[in-house]
Amino acid sequence: MSQNGPWDRRTQPNTPTDGKGDGFVNSNWATLSEPGKLCVNPKIDHKPESYDDLQLEFSPLLFSSLEAYLPLQVLNAPRDVKVHFMKNILFRYLPETERARVQRHKDYKQKIILNYPPLYKEIYTMQAEKFFTPSFLKAVRDNTEESFRSVMAEPSPGIYTFEMLQPQFCEMLVSEVDHFERWVHETKFRIMRPNTMNQYGAVLDDLGMESMLDKFMNDYIRPISRVFFAGVGGSTLDSHHGFVVEYGIHRDVELGFHVDDSEVTLNICLGNQFSGGELFFRGVRCDAHVNTESQPEEIFDYCHVPGHAVLHNGRHRHGARATTSGQRINLIIWCRSTVFREMKKYLRDSSSWCGECRRQKKERERLSIAATKQVSYHAFDLQAIGYSVL
Ligand SMILES: [Zn+2]
Image 1 (cartoon, helix red, strand yellow):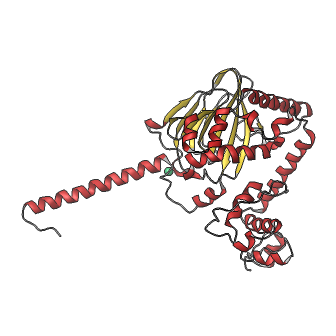
Image 2 (tube, helix red, strand yellow; image 1 turned 180 degrees about the horizontal axis):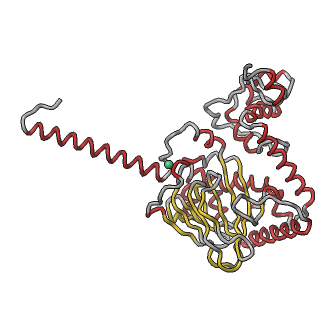
Image 3 (tube, protein in one colour; image 1 turned 60 degrees about the vertical axis):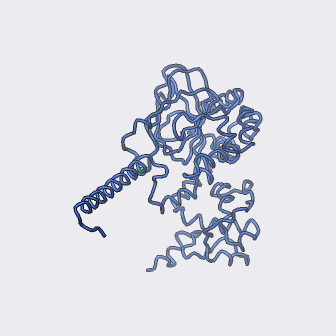
């Protein structure tokens, strides 16, 4: 039986197995989606629509960033047609089990939003002047490499540190997370922790801060990443995972050596009083080289300062040393790029960003230059004793 036979259609009614996108809309516009393909070259000056108000299976940002790749006749169509066309494409990448997981997670978030009473409603929407320090805001508004460098340090290649958040916002966010933890304890609500490595902490997206963090990433992380992380999808960041982690005596103590599931990670210390907890970095690595040795120049340790951020490549190997006293709370935003992840499947050469790929490439070049030199020395010797060299 063919893979595109009727059996496949029955089991996956919304999946366009033959590329014709059946089952979504029945207007005349549906015929537009028949080829179901994006254009290779994006329309560079295109201003995408907002999809924030729609209940979608994927991040609204993903739809906005895909728009520039739509074929012209779809690009000029009404928004619901564009949604339909893009959904058809995205569903091809999402198996049934993954779709069920996405739906369960949506229900889980909805349950929290309906039941949890926020302590500070005002931090659930972006208020840049109240969140960020004036110097950081000015740098972002000027939006040039020079303006970013004027407020940032690069203590080790590819690691950027800078003052970012106002103390009052840090305090409010810490209190909000404490309040949430108390609510979880009192109501015995079973929450999902930020990742497999942290026993404590909360996913801010699940708490109802998803659209605030979308703006946070779009307007305040992406402009910087576009300049400093362009080679790893920094200019096409389109989704995030935002969470708070807590370290201390009655919390997680340390965090093992790892890479993040992100293209670019923003890690901001929110406070409070603590000692220890330094971040240690050990070089950027691709999947194939994640367990290779560090070079001396890749070794870098960083001490957290409340309100200050560290921005780094998600593949920059790191860990956190034990927080030996007090309590340390950090806000972490993992920013991802669908475009970069898709491209990575086809590009074999990671030497523009993986330290080990780069080292090996240099070594190959050194050996080939040495071999060429040897050949030419040999030719020179032959010439010296009267042989002609072609
Ligand atoms: Zn590599």
